[in-house]
Every structure is written in C-alpha cells, then in structure tokens.
Amino acid sequence: GESVGLHLPTLSVQEGDNSIINCAYSNSASDYFIWYKQESGKGPQFIIDIRSNMDKRQGQRVTVLLNKTVKHLSLQIAATQPGDSAVYFCADLPLGRRALTFGSGTRLQVQP
Amino acid sequence: GAVVSQHPSRVICKSGTSVKIECRSLDFQATTMFWYRQFPKQSLMLMATSNEGSKATYEQGVEKDKFLINHASLTLSTLTVTSAHPEDSSFYICSASGTGGDSPLHFGNGTRLTVT
Image: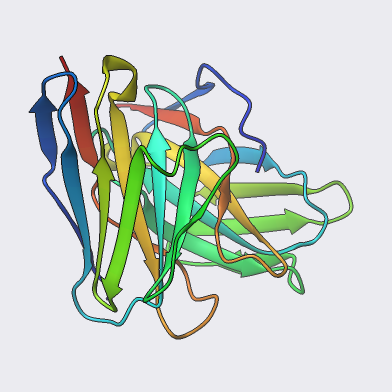
C-alpha cells in the first residue's frame, strides 16, 4: 500500500447503503492482499484477503476486487451497519517478503 | 481462530525510563513476529521483523539500540523501548505469522505508550 497520508480520508454512508473503499498499491510484485478493519484503540482485524491470481473474492457482506493492471484494490461492504464504522486499511505482501505494507487507510462513518 | 495477545494495553512512563511490551501467540507457533508503530490518524509503519531464535531485522530509520526486540520462543516476542522520550509516544502493535507461510497475519490489540 501507499502510506502517505497525515490525515485519513473519510467515507460517510447511510445505514443500509453499500460502501466502497478504495486502495492503491505501489508494488507490482505484490501477490497477496488483505483488508483490515481497525476500531479505535484496537489492533487491525482481518476482514478478507485475495491472491494476485484472482480478481474477485466474496465473504459475508464483503467483496474484494483486485485490478492488477492499475494496481487497485477495493472493498465493498453490503448493507453497511453502524458497527462497520471504523478505519479500513488495505495491506499487501510483496513476493519474497513476510511483512505487510499498509495503505494510508479510510475512515468509514455510518450514519444511522 | 489465531489469537495474538499484547500486554500491557496502555502504559505511561516518565522520560528516560524503559518500557517493555509483550506479544504472545496464544494458540499457534509464531515463527515470525512483526512490530509496527502507528501515530494518530496515520497508518501502521513496520519497525522490525523478528524470527524466533535470531536477531531482529529493523526497518530503515528505526534505531535497534533504542527498540530492543527479543523473540526467545515461538510464542513470545518483546519490544523494549529504552530511554523513552515524549516523541516515542505512539501506538505499538505486534503481529504474528505462523508456520503456514503467508497465512493472514494476526494482530495484537496494541499498546498505547505515553511518555511524559
């Protein structure tokens, strides 16, 4: 991911709407990608992952899309709930490395 | 699921003192542990990677003599912030990777360090 921000972009959605959170990564050698959710004062919580040989993966209420051509990752959350309010980070794992590189994060605010 | 436990969750110390943070894998053997630092409203930045029984590998710009890492067993890694200063105040988070290779990394709940 590209960790460049000194501020977090915020996505505000209404409860029940779908949310789409985007992420750009910089390392074309990355072959594994993860989305994490981080609530205030807590560590990152795994949401969903995807390998570079796939372009879409679905979980429960979440879908991750990978576009390797433009090095873009997105997280779609269906029927967003207040409990989804948190900061979301994408992370990628470059080939040959074991440490994740985190993107700058997006704050999701769900309005009731 | 895999659980990583961090202790303490919060610590306040005086400038010049040292603080030790523990990271434990509770239900799996962590061959590799990672230490990250997160400043407010910023992302997680990798500080160092430690493999059980060997020296840690530090990222560029991270002082190894200031941030001492010990990974003496497959379930425990410690980070000691030596001679802490107010600028070391941050959220420190560990993660652990098991013997399954590139399985999703599991994170602890972080330690909020405040240096006064």
